[in-house]
Length: 205
Ligand code: FE
Ligand code: FE
Ligand code: FE
Ligand code: ZN
Image (cartoon, rainbow, N blue to C red; front, side, top):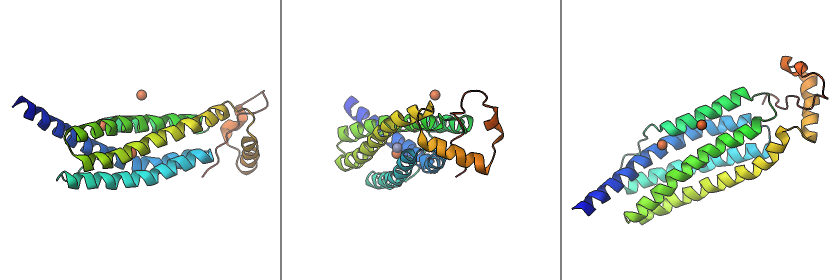
């Protein structure tokens, strides 16, 4: 009856979202190393690197869920994560030599985490509604990791937003000298006047 149809629909929603999330996690497996490599702040790099390790676990957790649900472990293109990661790529390119690069990376990372939090939050609720307790528990573990990653990024944001304004960053000045000594990036010399506070702090890693 009507009630049964509803339940079938909810299961279909869950199945579709699982395939979507599987694709999204796999895209993140590719994106996170690039974000880590691009980050200049040590904590931020560490956050991306450790979330990469968590993401590997999340992929295998989804594979366990597929097995529990008797579904093939198959992803389905998620246009949302593709768009979020595309924006992240734009930020990495446009702010490559800017002191606000890390602040931009934090925002890019948080957009991905917030998307994942929505997906996993809904999937947990649907799995519970469908009485799939084991599935719900696995998805909850991932949900908590996504929330943790988001909070970590928020905290790091407080540091890198200040650094983006080039205020009192001893590290930056040291790196500035190092960069100046090794390779004279052409654009660096253009910043005239004010005591070149915002020199490119990104060295080639
Ligand atoms: Fe994830
Ligand atoms: Fe999606
Ligand atoms: Fe956007
Ligand atoms: Zn995540």
